[in-house]
Amino acid sequence: MDSSQWIDVVEDKFKYSLDHFVIPDHYEKDVESILIPHGLIMDRIAKLAQIITSEYDNERVVVCCVLKGGHQFFSDLVRYMKKALNKQGKTLPITLDFVRVKSYENDKSTGTVQISMTDKELRDLHGKNLLLVEDIIDTGNTMKKLLETLSQYSIKSVKVASLLLKKTPLSCGYVPDYVGFAVPDLFVVGYCLDYNDIFRDLDHICAISETGKVKYAI
Image (cartoon, rainbow, N blue to C red; front, side, top):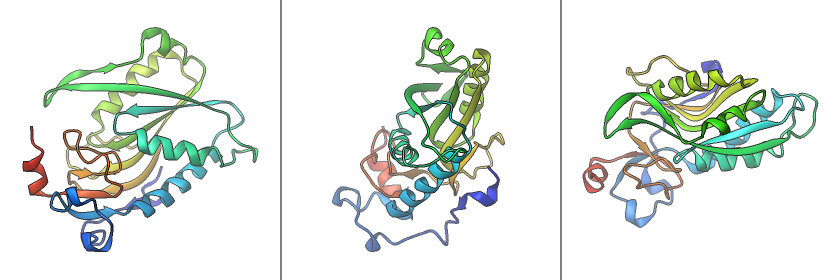
């Protein structure tokens, strides 16, 4: 996807006051600002579903959620994709799947990607169309390694949809096929994006505050 097709979240323009939206009481001091309100997230996902579905033919697509963070985006994207039309103006046959991917031990990269799918499950993807659904692409290293692994299994097509793409100098340059928003180089939480498994129950995508970092640090 060309950068002109996604929404570029610029911090000084997309920095909504907490007073303007509903924030759970238990997070009022833990987030600094709202970057992307929930309603905007939903509208953008609806548009992404239309774009993605319109690029497929009548062949079935395996939509695979990258857990844990991707599950809310995955759920909402699939809901909209069910109503969208493909190249032939018809609804798209969809199969759902899930995968956990791990490339770090503590805070250190292992240099390899551990995938929860068995070799048999990966071989079952042979000849199929696969759409990976991710919450955020940070440096891009993990997704690049995952795609390298999947390339060994003769999958017909592999595309990646990520709700967020972080604008970080640490990026390896990888850009997914479909992007919802490009976000500043901040630690963002909410809409199932977490900080040590906290904030997954926050509807909006927010910048975590220093108070929140200290409060929920491990």
